[in-house]
Length: 278
Ligand SMILES: [Zn+2]
Ligand SMILES: [Zn+2]
Image (cartoon, rainbow, N blue to C red; front, side, top):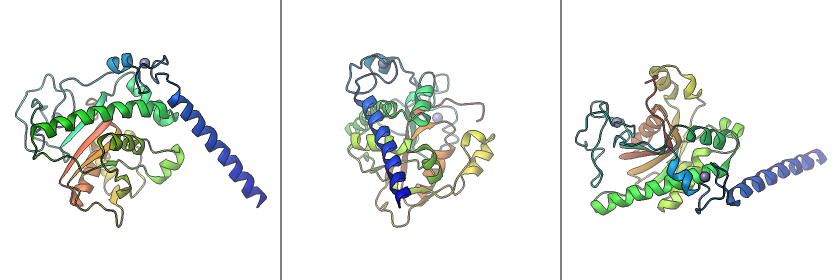
């Protein structure tokens, strides 16, 4: 019993120190990127917000840069009045299962290092700053959509790409779920992240070498939690920290579509450009 009490005390102390440290970073007023005083309400200063990498001329469907690709008319899944139609060469012939995929930033230096620090060094102040910006980008996007067409549907809910419980225990927090909480609050949408779960542990997608391996790795990876209240949710936003090959978000999209959702928009902190992995 004494051992149990002391274990609880030690663990509780770790939790208190962890929370105090993260809280101090978040409210310190220092920019999480350059370390100087932030002149904004966010943990990113205005200089860093302007200088961090963004994807210019993004495809209106997959979100990848398509400056050099042919521009074509938007298809039924990507149509957004008020947004110039711009699609990459691949999307018209190989449309993804999701309606669109966008990142607040491009996955390039120093965003890649910032997100690595967020995920692996528990820098929650970085996650807060990047999520704040993502929320603002999304808010502007959906406000524009609503202004242009009153019949255009506002998303019903936000859902984070779930971590497998084993990886949650290793990491101590769920980075996508924290992002989803912030953007759901910003957009005043319900956060239904509890409605989906990883149904099996998958190897990290970065370890799968080919597209076929990545797709096979994710078959049956997600499921709807029994009794979850997804009924009536026709338009859902899926949130992840980084989207690279889209294999993970496509797999979750297909699970949601199978459950009756009609449209899935994917948003992430950073969208990675096409890699040689395809
Ligand atoms: Zn800064
Ligand atoms: Zn595209």
